[in-house]
Structure formats: structure tokens, C-alpha cells
Amino acid sequence: MPNLLKDVVGILDQLDVQKVHCVVGHDWGAAVAWQLAGRFPKRFERLVALSVGHNASMFSMGGNRQREKSWYMLFFKVHATYHCYSEPMLAVQ
Image (cartoon, rainbow, N blue to C red):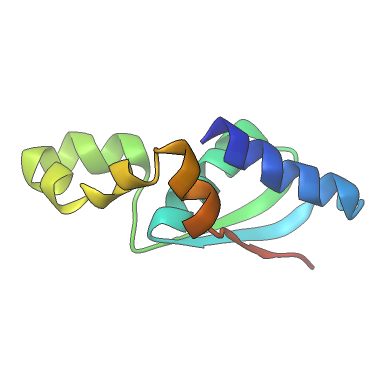
């Protein structure tokens, strides 16, 4: 995840985008969006997370059942796969 976040921020830097009006993420992209907004709060004005709550609340409130439903997120933690399959959606205004 740290490399993915650096990639997104690096793209914004290359495009000379200092502040994003809204970062939008769905499913796995929502986890990325939560991390972007949390780690770089001055870069993102708003956050829209579709179908996924914050990581901390999702696992603490859902217990084992939620972990079972979210098993596929482990797939993206493998270095080679998240570079190939994850694309956070950015809405720049």
C-alpha cells in the first residue's frame, strides 16, 4: 500500500495538482482512497468511499464474518498483483 500511495501522489505532483477536490474509491479502491485521505489530508478536500467503510471499523464491527468476505483484499497485498490490478479513481476539479 505505501508504494501505491506514493505512486498516486507522484502522479499528482507530475501533473502539478496541489489539491484534489475529491478522491473516489470503490471496493479495493476505497481502501486506497481512505489511506490517501488519511495520510495526505492537505492534498484531498473530500473523500467518497463506495461499498467499503474505513478499514478499522470494517474489521472491528464485522468480526470474522467481514474478514471472510474481504479475503480478496489480501490478494492485493502481494507486490506484483496490486500494481497490475488496482486503479484508484481520482476526480480532479
